[in-house]
Image (cartoon, rainbow, N blue to C red):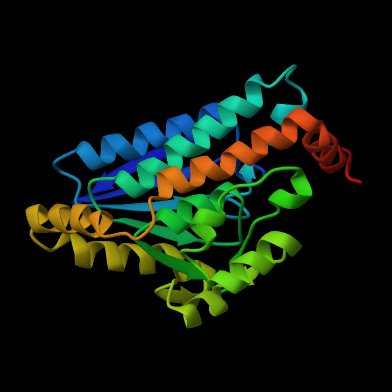
Length: 246
């Protein structure tokens, strides 16, 4: 359980494994960030595949951890951990291919939205339940997956989008049956790994350099509103309702 890495033929597979739903505790986000950064710095790695075990890709942060921790320490750690992990995907020195299955929610959207390429299983869904959980954030990353007006509607309503919809938007490269997801992601990764590694690393840096939005600053701005909501007490009530199943 935790963050697992396997390296073969220039492809590093970084796998999220936090049963039952891959809701990562604060330390899990930092561990994921450290693993991704180490993979990018490894001269033997030419591409990273970010995947997950279990029922879904990622259900976001571990809200139960926040609710059982006094004060705001767990909230601050989770926010900093998410910021670190999302940035590590974006800043990874080699391309990152996200292999998404099942649910991709909250922090999962932050990871997939910052990946260079997304390949999804046909049962994958993407969404931000933040408003229902008393938080804001990752609209920055959802906006890299769906058109702006749809992003706004998804934030307000907490409704999800399907992998097929994202395929039509062009933000998902390929949709495959779940049993073929790993092979499809590795196939794309190996195509990239076969290229000159110096050129691919330069390509990654250059593409980040021409991005119209600074995803780190944009996400940090969103997080400020989450902290503001927490000061009012409304966020704690929303999280507790979720934990209580109301």
